[in-house]
Amino acid sequence: MTIHGRAELRTSPDGAVEFDADVLVIGGGPAGTWAAVSAAERGARVVLADKGFCGTSGATAAAGTGVWYVDPDPALREAAMANREKMGGYLQDRRWMARVLDQTFEDSNRLAAWGYPYPVDDSGKSQRNSLQGPEYMRLMRKRTKQAGVTILDHSPALELLVDDDGAVAGASGVRRQKHDGWTVRASAVVIATGGCAFLSKTLGSNVLTGDGYLMAAEVGAEFSSMEFSNPYAISPAFGSVTKTLFYGWATFSYEDGSVVPGAASKGGRSAIARALLQGPVYARLDKADVDVQRHMRASQPNFFLPFDRTGIDPFSERFPVTLRLEGTVRGTGGLRIVDDSCATSVPGLYAAGDAATRELICGGFTGGGSHNAAWAMSSGTWAGWGAAGYARQLGPARRRHLASAGTVAFRSRSRRPFEPAALAKAVQDEVYPYELNYFRHASRLEGALARLDAAWTDASAADAASKDDVLRARESAAMLATSRWMYRSALARHESRGMHRRDDHPDQDDRLRHYLTSGGLDEVWTAVRPHADISYAEAAE
Image 1: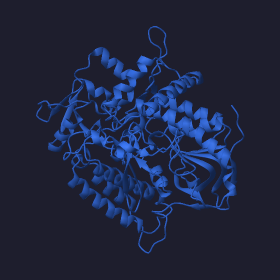
Image 2: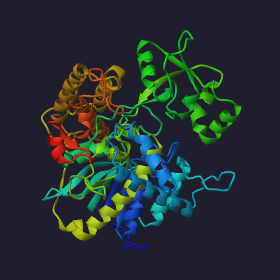
Image 3: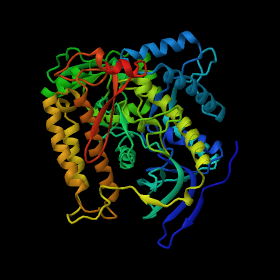
Image 4: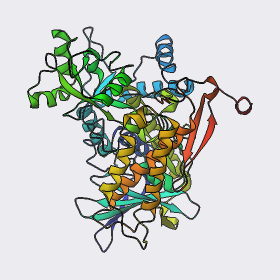
């Protein structure tokens, strides 16, 4: 390991801190920590800024997750890739799938070498296809610090910095515990801020509001597959745990006790959604025998916390369930990456994990935990390498004149600032309802978009937020921007493919096997991009 030293720290007269670094990583989950470690191992001076406490915040740290870890046997790898293709609407890219399988295998083995306590089977073989979030992220924080990375905890980023040529050259944000600010001048930035779950109270995801999307869009970054952004997870109505695997052993019923036809944790969630439109739905994990019950509690103890708190035995008693929107956290849309280093369409800006599109390995259907976990490891590793290489070629950011790129909630206007909570609620009113987001139709999407576009016009014309409100203002603005890319893309895909369902276009159309790129803030746009297997000449015919 070669470390060239830590980022240079300065303190301004008002107490805010300033750093000169080669690479800034925004986000401290799996993708962010892998990016930080990888960049540091390439000799870069790295700063990692986390909205929460690196190692405990985010979707992974709160629970266990599967990992798309497959032994390097050609037959096994082929089966692993083929198994996903139909489900994802054949939008995956086999080359990228193979890359991720290779890198995940290598990174998982590194975790073992670092001391992650993988369980072993009866034959003594290490089982590396799942991770316990708390142990995993505790280890990744440790490795990040050992690599020489400067970690800024409780320090959400608010805006990116750009040079005179429009290349990204750092970011600034706030230190919530110090009540001041931070600025990092960096030659390259990795966005690893996760997706957007719209404050839907899903476990570990309430810090994921699309902040990185907004910052990236303000410097002109593009998005891809944002129409695949409407996964809903089963959850107890009184809890936030959205681990849905165990509902495969459930019977779902109406309030009168009759079974909901077609309801299931996989493939039958639409039946649950339609039933919820009519009234309450209940579940009971009555298909799990004693042995399965024991394994459930051992593998996912936090799943049972809300039941234990309320005195409900989920195996013998019915309990009310709901579907919570997970948005782009479990969707496949995100920042478009343009090469193998996970660079975005903006010079100096890289994306990793759920902040980046996962279309290349998941197509149009959620990667759930396992594929997303593999993508976080792999894309984080590649983005860290790419950012470090870019920084090495470019040289120090301090040689460049930098400007702030932030827009909404930063600009001084004649109108009063918008109310962050009210704006967040307005967005939720458009993205939560099943009849708008789960079961899509042009007329309903157009109505929602008209209201969301009007909200953006009002928010962007409002005065700058106060120091106390700026973080929440940026979060709600990011949620609003995300919803508009989602729905504009959903309106542009005239078919049902993957998780994208159109009541007015219920079938998959083989002519539409392409990607949708989107972007823009004041004016949101979409464009067709051919799938990797289709030549541009074929796409034009």
